[in-house]
Length: 78
Image (tube, rainbow, N blue to C red; front, top):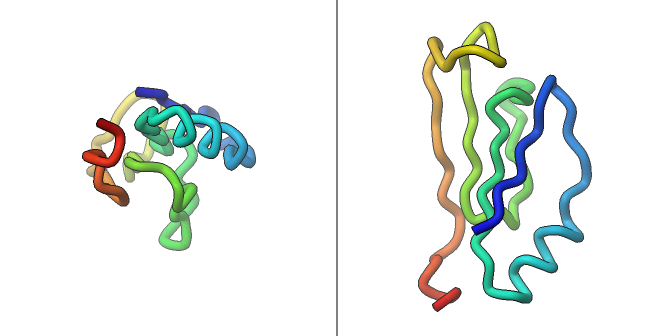
């Protein structure tokens, strides 16, 4: 499993990492908890899991709630 974590509101193009991980049958978890930018934030659609936090203090809490988006069938990695 590979976890990509975006912090302090910053994100980057992670497509090359996603492609490499999937070519090696590695599950990718994308941690968007500190970089949620509103209802148009989707994360990378190639991530197997994306985590979002709706808290007001991103670096300390998920007080406002959170959600996990599961996109792919991880059975394909076995």
